[in-house]
View 1 (cartoon, helix red, strand yellow):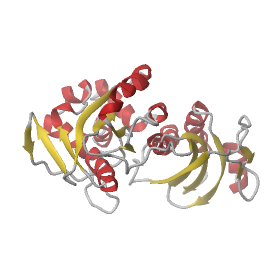
View 2: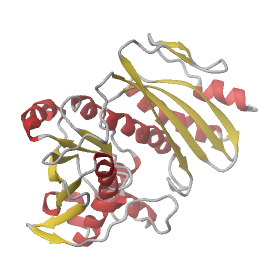
View 3: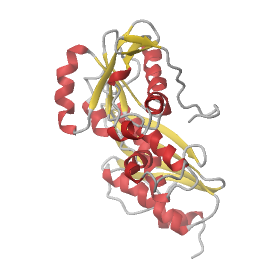
View 4: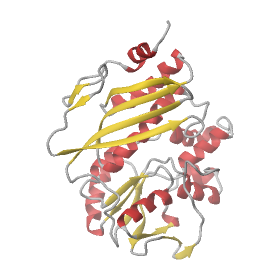
Length: 325
C-alpha cells in the first residue's frame, strides 16, 4: 500500500475509540473541540522525545509508543489531574508500516488503560522525534503544585529510585542477556508506570508535588525554589530495590537514585498533621511510599547519612549538558 500523511493518520492513528461526554470534536477537523465542565481546570503538559537523546535508536516501537505517553501521564499524576486527551506530532524518516503498527499498539495500550482519547496531531518527515501534548482535568483549587511546601513538612517518594537508570545502563552495554535476572530494571526504563492513582489520592493531603524525571535532587530543588525553603534528605532512607542493591555497587546506585532521573515516581511533601490521612489514602494502592526527609527553612538541600551531614556532588539531567548519564 502506498501511504501519504492522511492515509497514515487514517490507518494507524484514527482508531475507533469510545465517545466521551466532554469531547465535541476529535480527529478530522482543523482542531479538536473540548467542553470543560464548570468548577474544573484544564491541566496541560507537553513533552518532546528525540531519538538518541531521550530514547535509544534500537528501542522497540511498541516500547516507544508506551513510553512517550507514560512520561506525559507522569506530569498529570504530579498535578493530581485526571488524564483525558492527547495530541501527537510525530516526525519519521520514512514510512514503515511495521514500525507504525507497533508504535501505535504501545500508544493505544496505555490510552485505553486510562480511557483517554487521541484527538489530533501532525505527521511529517525528518529525524525521528515525537511530541505529545496531554490534557487533563482537575477540580478547581485541588491541583497539586510545587509552591506549597512549608517548614516541617515531610518529604516522600513513591516506589523505588534508580531502577530506570540501571535499566538504561544495561541496554547501553548490550547486557540484556547477560543480566537476564535484571530484566525488571530494563522494564522499569522502557515501561515506567505513571502514578496517576497516587496523584488523585494526594489531593488535599500533599502540600506540593513533582514527578521525578530529571533526578530526585534536581526535581526536589524545583519544589524548594518554588516554595522558598530547603530540605534535609536522609540517604539511608532512600527506597532502593533489592534488584538494584544486589547487582550494583553502592556508589553507582546512590548516584542513580539521586541524579539519573526517568524514574517517573512522585516526590511530594505532606504536613505532619496529614500523615494519618496519607496512610489511609495510599494504603490500598499497593505501591510503597517512603519518607526520605523533611522541609527546613535553609533554602538549600542538606544530605545526611546516619545523622552526619555528607557532601555529595549531584547534577541531574540537563538537555544542554554533556555526559548526563
